[in-house]
Image (tube, rainbow, N blue to C red; front, side, top):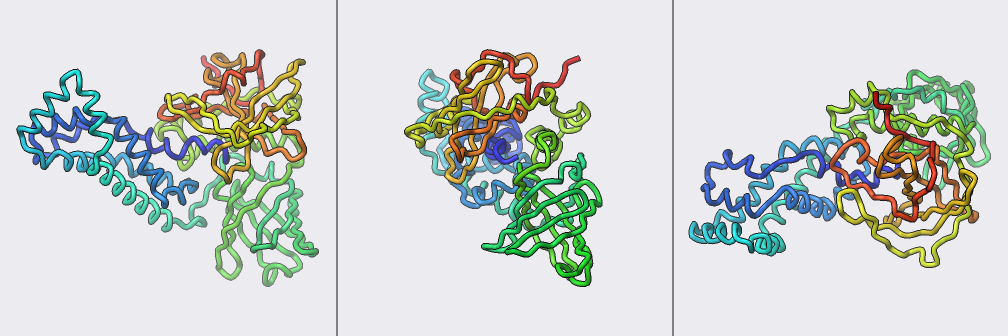
Length: 441
């Protein structure tokens, strides 16, 4: 799913470990006891996380690759093995050249009531550590990029834990080449493709839950009528990323962009399956690796019964200053910036309702973010509220589907900074739709 990931990419790094810097002192025999003590007084885990976050955000290669789930997974696995030792090398360099008398004086000052202020000033401009962290992040990104480039998506076959064939019917678009967009329609064993006035019907046969064959009986699309094999290796919202093995042995990577389902039931089933799969999959889950098996064994997310009455068409009023930036408080105490894009007015539970609608500040964002709380929070759903994504309005209306409400990552694990819904987005009734917490026995 595209929108839930906008909270994840940085915090997947910041939440993978917890440590104290003095854990490595015994391994650094060249440091004196006084040097090690000064390091403990000057640096904390929070300092490391802040520097690490800044270094990631300033690394252009990380920004380029941050949407690649495999890249994130490789880098995340490497961080616990190397981040602490590299950081300790950097902070050691910052004090190694100091004379013993100077170190003793600094320790005395740091242990005084003025220590906190001195430490803040010291950290404000520390060339050694800033440079060391930037160098580490650059090495980390290069390592993860190399590993990602070695991956062959065809070999990276993933059999989804649910039958994609059951929700495959519907319409899609497929960009064949720049300026050439094929319209694709699936109906059971038949896939119809239309491009520039031409129509081709293909036989569609599912081989498992991620791989299928396409065959053109007339032989006009593929040489000698041989089938091609397609492997879906990643689903991101309505985008189905797949690799095709052509009869001539060439691999092509492409994306089917879903435009419609044949039924509302299929749309909700796709949402629920996709949300569970995100948490089951080691490459996309926010859960610690050791918790994935238990989450899967427990059946994943709980969901309220689906009712189409919980999908509402709201009248959208765009903010007269649609570029207005507001800060939303998060669970970690940090602030997250959004555009206050407008308000959505609708009827639900027999009453008029209104919710503020936000837009991520990234200019390429094509979705809206609606965080909300209701009277199920703390019992049937997460105490911190839930989120909904919506498409940009095109006709003055916006569709809000509470059946597709989901929890922030903070409902399941620690180490994330989840936006807290504003007070204006509290609904004074139970919204018994969308995701709910597992039943406690």
